[in-house]
Length: 96
Image (cartoon, rainbow, N blue to C red; front, side, top):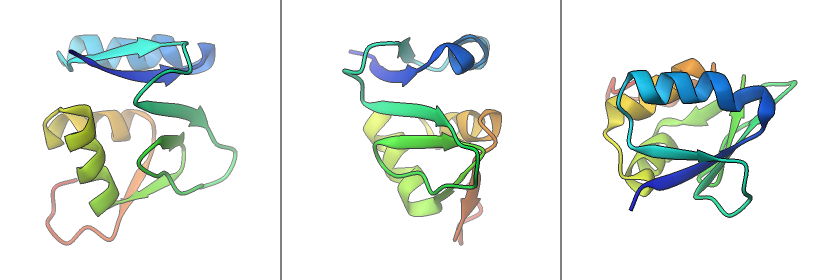
């Protein structure tokens, strides 16, 4: 079963394009019943295991855990984070 990411109207189209073009096995939904939610952040807010803040940041360990939760490769998680302009902090492995 594909994992689901919630995105509102302002993000769903552009996020859908990157997911489809890169073959990322994730379903986008406007339903609140999702594995991860994506929001546009006016400031550089920290993302966590349940929420990605577009324009914010995420700790490397959290990004790796989210990739595992979503059952996608790290490289695909990196593509999603780059698309959402989410900066990865505290990365000592060079994965992102």
